[in-house]
Length: 203
Image (tube, rainbow, N blue to C red; front, side, top):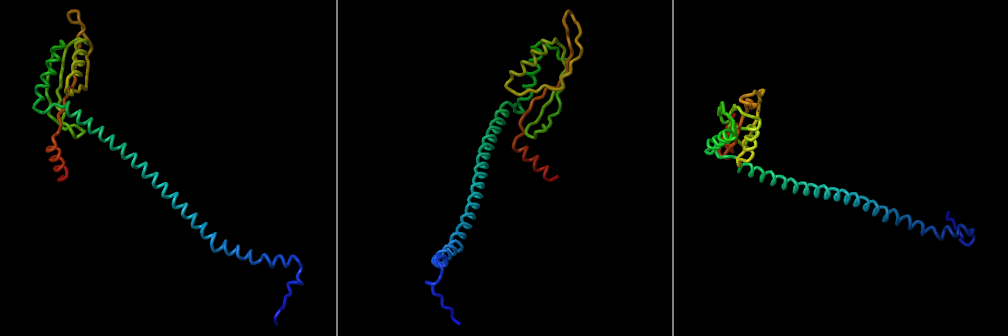
């Protein structure tokens, strides 16, 4: 049975409701079908952009750190090359050690013992150490002058294991006995380093 509704007989609020209902329905449809999906897409895109920005910032930080590491590596390589220039070649070792002995004599020290040791690989693995055990007699001034003169050599000479005996008065001077290890270094050639590496791998 069909129901006939005469709009003219409806109350005013019903007429207003009927007149705006299509607009409301259309607005709801627009929101549901167009606006909400777009907002979800915008939110997803913003999240993706934030993630990409974080990745870009991280990459830029890594690039900046890489540049710093490259500069530090270059500085260390240059420093190693400088130090290698201060290392005597093996053929120069004998003359260098004689030079050290001559400096001790020139400083007024009495060299009681001079015992060269065996060449050994330094813990760094990049140089050989050539040690000499030394015993001397002299004044504090003589010993200080000798040690100071070593710092002016253009080659590296390291003094370690310094032991001083109690001073004694001899002819009006306080003399003391000192023992120490003087060591110089020579670079391990690339061929020797390669051979040592190959031997280590075989083991």
